[in-house]
Amino acid sequence: AVDLTMRSVNLVLGFYGRLHIAEYIGLAAVLIAGFWLVRDGAVSIGTATAAALYFHSLFGPVNAALVLLDDAQSAAAGLARL
Image (cartoon, rainbow, N blue to C red):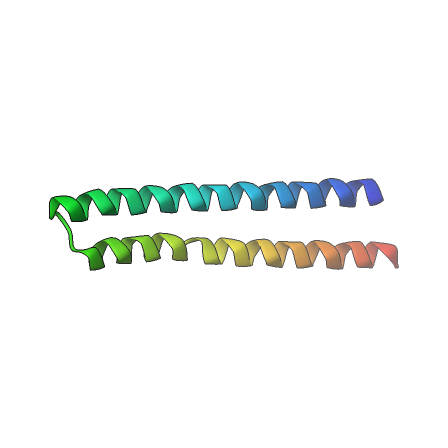
């Protein structure tokens, strides 16, 4: 049971790490694209900022789902000990 718990914790931690890397790389790409579009006059700085904020807000629900999954896993482990 401890082995299974440790593997699942490592899996969740690895997923969090990959999720944050994806978030940072994606946000950097949006900001770079926004910089070039603003520089060329294709969009306003407000539009580029809104795009970056929309992209950033996509990861909030994913993080909330992961926290919920982590809580459910902890509850299941606690019930297994009973």
